[in-house]
Length: 414
Image (cartoon, rainbow, N blue to C red; front, side, top):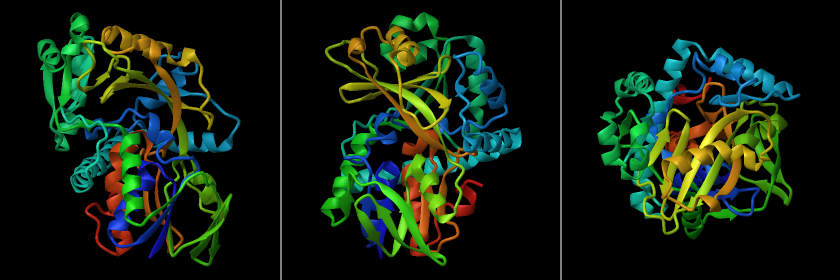
């Protein structure tokens, strides 16, 4: 078939790759001037099944309430004059029971771990350089109390089959020597040796080039405006450049997906959750990070890609604006400067803010809904880079009529 993939982030491009492998003619339509330049550009870059905990947990409602008065909360709620935000929040809060949080975490981990396997297959088949670091990810704690609580919490991942190692202070510093200068402020850590990291943007760009070399069409600088439907079939998509016809369509527009789906009367409970990142060159500094890490006390993630370091923090339930000020980055900047004083050129940090397409359950939509030739692959939230490859393979299997490795009913948002 000729399949039009709407969206050129990592989710859309991986979908195009998997569909092309099955022999389909693919056209990717992306509003920006290049693929992978929105959410896929500034994310933490972690391939982290070990971080598959859902944000919709029993603790989340109080954290969001406190965030109205305190800025140091891990999830910040900024009320908007938009009914859709309030409806999404109600659905999110409905997923915050212990039972639902546990079930959704298990489903999320299943997608993430399967997706990592597919990523590794793709890298072997295509040969992509994206600053990969496969030494695992370290989650470290500053107090003994938090360390013990974190180790107990991570047993959830161990029970799901993920490999974790509990490290004392000396073992943390042996694993990541760049933390030596703050060693006396680290109580211990949890190490997930099979997690990995790499630049999502570099990967997406390289994979899109591979798709184009093999006959796929990558149309950038073209905004999707609406879908046209007749009965239970989509007939075409209208963009700001005209009309695109295809046999089938894939909606992989992330935060824009609910806007487009409303043009065919299909509501999607996806809301943007804003995150902030710094991209800092390593320069000639003698002690840069060597492994992806998360400061669990401050909820700041640090990842090394080749000659740069990515620092990410904050989950802000606000609106669609990506506006930011230097003060938004002050805390995370101070944390990374404390942790790695000789690790990077701190004064050359590039500031960025982006939106994660979150569903109330933290699980994506994969597969069809009301229309026979429209597939969804969207709503991947804060670990879209981690879940994108498995989602693409599940999608391609469903398009082909094969039984996916993970049943759609077991992974889809509901």
